[in-house]
Image (tube, rainbow, N blue to C red; front, side, top):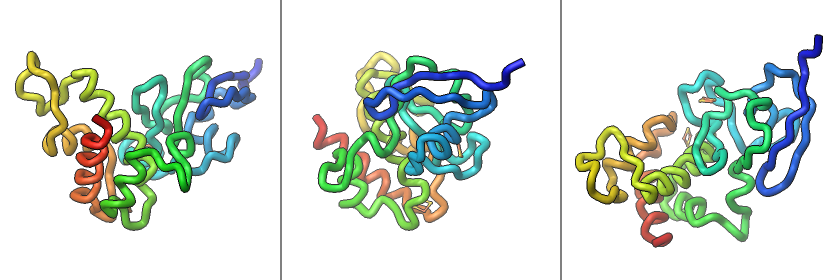
Amino acid sequence: MSYSSQVSFTINGESRVLDVDNRTTLLDALREHLHLTGTKKGCDHGQCGACTVIIDGRRVNSCLTLAVMHEGDAITTIEGLGKPGDLHPMQAAFVKHDGFQCGYCTPGQICSSVAVLEEIKANIPSHVTADLTAATTVTEVEIRERMSGNLCRCGAYSNIVEAIVEAAGTRA
Ligand code: FES
Ligand code: FES
């Protein structure tokens, strides 16, 4: 009986094929097999958000999902959002507003915040959305609620919120 499988997916626009133990998390596949170490392992239990990546437009904790579950998916990691000299607007806003200290949570914060703005744009309500019939707007309260799954031990929260608000404005 085989305990490994082949999985094909697109990572940051590039097709990749991996042979992995069926129990390999997507996080370990990214870090250990593909050497994309921008995605961080904080808790490995779905509690900190450091491992957040974007899969087909939705943010996902990559420590909580198996690589073999993502056949055919399009996955974006922090490396795929932008690069030094060609930063994604959210990355640039984090730099401008000092949205980090040690930086360990930052890739997850940035992937999550990019997807948060798409969620708001798509009118997907959150727990604090008061009027479900009105268009959802980018408010500080909405951002804090939607980013609550991304913990920052350095406590850079207020600067993170400022960065996301700015990125939302410049994107419009
Ligand atoms: S490492 Fe995945 S949520 Fe903490
Ligand atoms: S910047 Fe250090 S944990 Fe967030």
